[in-house]
Structures are given as structure tokens and as C-alpha cells.
Image (cartoon, rainbow over all chains, first blue to last red; front, side, top):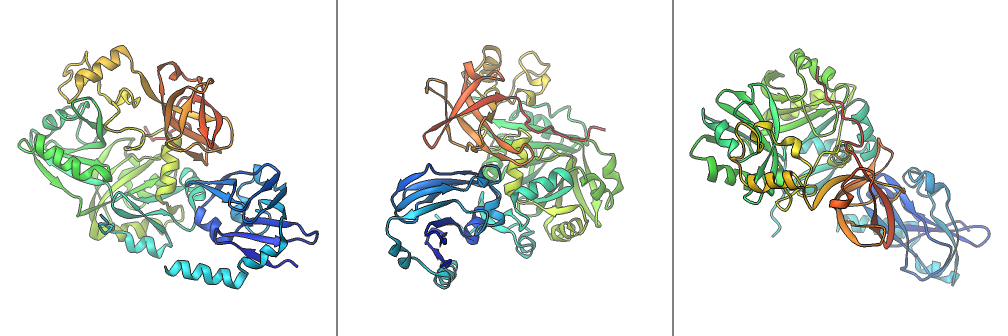
Length: 127
Length: 373
């Protein structure tokens, strides 16, 4: 299954064939942040939902990236060290942040699917 | 508390161009266009960028005594400012603190043209009226004129298509020039470090002029985001960040802007607010000073970041900082204590609990390319 799940913090999660979950930020997030010039990626290890695990620096400001759900970060995207602009160019592709092993895979069911995330974006834009 | 935002004469154009608008100094201003801050910055350095800076305050001081009167408020030679030339100046207070920085141009023997910062313009007008209102006529153009900046290596070629005379102007020259049939006040200056012009145009003609300039293939609309990274690379101060009422021109490393005749050993020494303190600081040195800072890692170091020495002792604070697209690296300016003022000094920024090494650096970070003829 490669269906995307989304958080209210505009992160996306995708379950890979090996069961690991890839995490990045959405197109909406990269557009709101502006040109990304630096990404501080996390140390590998276990984190709780809400822990600040990464920092995105755009030309405008620094934004922290929170752990979307409980789990263990098993890999980071080395590409972002030299090419932080990948976050803007391909937020759902080469601009991914890290891979993680979920503490509880059923947690994905509580996150938004693409249709729900689109409705969430529309609702927040209207607010 | 929430007063409605003001709009410049180009507001409809900004929206049409897809600008992202943000509140700035009481105005709704374009922070970036669809091109984005990085590309807007690069475009200005390689071709030409058009900026709406109409939020800034434009004034005229009329009367034969206007120059002598204004001199009582700024440490700059205004009396001998020739017609057709502009100078950078600052209003100081009794403690030598900077109330605002400004541009002063002489339009004619009896008329000075002044541009002040948006956030200070009401206070500046009151300051002028209180101190020199009886000596000259102060005409405030805040609601009647727009200000456009055309900046970049192609700016002169572009503007010369509308008025060939601008090609002859050199850095800091100033003239009344017809553009599209309207009298504009044009200075060859700007705040990007590039060659370029600032153009004062009546509100009702501003959009037509902006559209005409944007129709030129070299020109893109540029927002305040890129304006900030451009001026930071050029080592130029932003009022309220890199200087304030709590800093003197000496502390802000702006001694160069104090005209020779107004200095302690000059022909018209002093005679501006705070002169004694400023002269004392020039003679004895200062406890802290604004310096350029180059972070030695990729992490941008932002305004307000504490600066410490190798042992972690506080020695200052960053006043402006970010990423320099042309430098292709982070850059900053900050105030540091006396021991760390020399270029090459090693200091550290405290970012998210981590010490980022920084080197005190000369400014500008990117070479200024003004046209001096």
C-alpha cells in the first residue's frame, strides 16, 4: 500500500513495501514556507509524537517539524544536506525527510487521507 | 488595536501579479511574487527588479532656510549639498540615538526632497514640524506620491528607454525627469547594492509606469523578501533592526555617513542632537558595535540570536540574519562587545541550544555595484 496519509501540521506519511513509513511535508507546506535553504535532520532513534525532530529554514523563517506519530527514525534523506531546495521542487518525492518504523501501525487509520486533507486545506483557507 | 492596513497605489497590480501580501509598517505589501524570494533576488542581481516602496514617507522642505534648518537635526552636510545630489542621513536624539535614517536630495536651491522609513514617518513628520516647522514649509507627500525602485545591472538600460537622460546620471545624483509625460523625481540609488534608480511618481500615474517597466523583458516584480536579502548582502542597515534609538551612528558603524564638516574637527562641527556623545564615542571608542558575521555552518542565524564567546559568555546579539542567495551561504549582522569588533574575530551564535561558529567579517558581503561614471 502506498496511499498517502496527512497530519494537520501538513506532513505526509507513506507506507513503503518494506513496512517502513516515509515522512515529508506537503506541497501546501513548502509553498507557505517559501524557498528552503537549510534542513536540520534528526538523529536516528525513537521519538514520541510531537517531538521536534527537524528544522526547516526558508528564506523567510525557521519552522520546526514534529514527529507525526510515535516511532523510531531509521533513515534520513542525505540529499537534503546539499540540496535543501528539493523540499520545494519535489515535496512528495526527492524532498522526503526521514523514514521511520511505527510503534503502532494502526495509528495511520487516525490520520487524514488525501480527500480529507484537501477538505482540511479548503476549510482552513476559508477560515 | 487592529487598524485597517493601508494600500499603495500598486495594490491592484500586486494582486494581479499573484503577490503574497503581508502587513508591513501598517501597509499591505508584497513579500514575494510567484517567482519566489530566491529567484527574485537572483533576478535583481543579474537583470532588473521593480520594487514598490511606496510605504516609505516622501516629504519636501521648501524655503531658503530649509537646508540650514534640516542640518540642526542630522549630522550631515545639507547646506553644501549641491542641486541634483542626494545624501544619506539620520535623525539623532539628544543621546545620539538614531530616530530614523533618511535620504535627502536637493531639488533646487529652495527645495529639499526627503525619503524616510515607513514605520517612522508619522514620528518624523512631527519631529520636523516641532523643530524646524517655523523655518521652512514642510510638505508631506505621504498620500500623494508612490515610490518605485528599479534595481539591477539592466536598470539603467531599461529606464533610458523612457528617458535617455537617466543614463548620464551617476550614483546618488537626483533629478526631476519626465517619465510617460509625468514629472518624476529620480535618484540613481537604491537599497540592494546594485546600480539602479528610485522613482517618485504621483499615485495616479504609478500603475501605468510600473506596468510599462514590467513590460520590458529584463524586468520582474520583486517583493520585500528579496529586498531584505539583497540589502543584507550589501551590508545596508535596516532601521528598527540594525539601528534604533538605542544605538548611535558610531555604534551602528555609520561614521562614514557623518559629513566631514559636521565632525568634531569640521568647519560646522556639531550642531545636531547628541553631537557631544557621538564625538566622545568617536574619540574613545564604543563598548559595542555593529559588525558583519559569517556563520561557518549552513544554519541561518536569525535576528535576536544571542552571540557568545568560546566560553559561552554573552557578548552580543544578531540584529539581522538569514541566507544570502548570491553569497550562497548564511550571513548576518550583529552587535558585539569591544574585544570582538576586529574582522576575523571568532564568535558563536546560540541556535536551538547549539553553538554555531561565526567569523566577524567586513561588509558588504557581496560587492556593491553602484554606477559612479
